[in-house]
Length: 248
Image 1 (cartoon, rainbow, N blue to C red):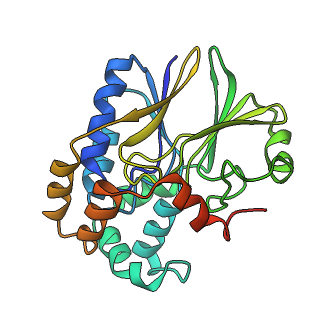
Image 2: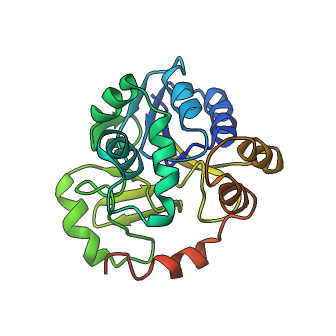
C-alpha cells in the first residue's frame, strides 16, 4: 500500500496539482493529508481537489486549518499576528458549513501500518501539539520523551516546511516538507511511503503559478507569489529564523 504524504499545501493549487500528477504516476493507492491545506490564496480549490481525488484519502488537522476554522466560527484568534488577520478572515470566508464540519472532524493524529516500513504515526507538528517546532538541529534528548513512547516504527510530520529524515532512539522521524510554501528552496516537497521512504521534490512552473496566485483576490497574493513561490527562503536562513522558537 504505497502512501503519499501531502503536507502544508497552504492554498497553492498549482503546486498541489503538480504533486498530484506525480502521485498518480507513482502508483500510490492511499493519501494522507497532514494538515495546513489552509490558509493560502486558493483554499477552496485545494480543498475541493483533495476531496475528489478518487484515491482513498485521510486528513489530519494542522494549526492553519484549526485557526481558519476558528476565524470562521468566532473570529481570528490572538495567536495570529496582526498583519495576517485580513488574510485569515478572507480564508474563513471561502469556507462553507460542510467544510467546517469536515475540518472539525479531522483528528490530530492517525496510525497506519505501511508494508515495508511498519507502524506509522502521522501528525502535523508533534503528536501532542500542532504548533511545536523542532528541526533537524533539535537535540535528540529533547525529542526522545515525545516520540519514543509512541511505539511506532516511523512518524511523519510537517509544520516547519523543511523536509528531513532522522532517527531518534528507535523511531524514524520524517518531515514531509511543504507542498505550497517551502522554506528550503523552490519546489513542492512531499513523501512517498512504500517498501522504502522516498523524499520527493516536485518542480513546477513557478512563473505560471505566481501569475495564477496574483490573479486571485487573496489579500496577500503578491507576498505569497514572491516569497512562497518565486523566491522561497533556503533552509539555512529558516533554521536561523526559527532558532528562538524551536524546542531546545
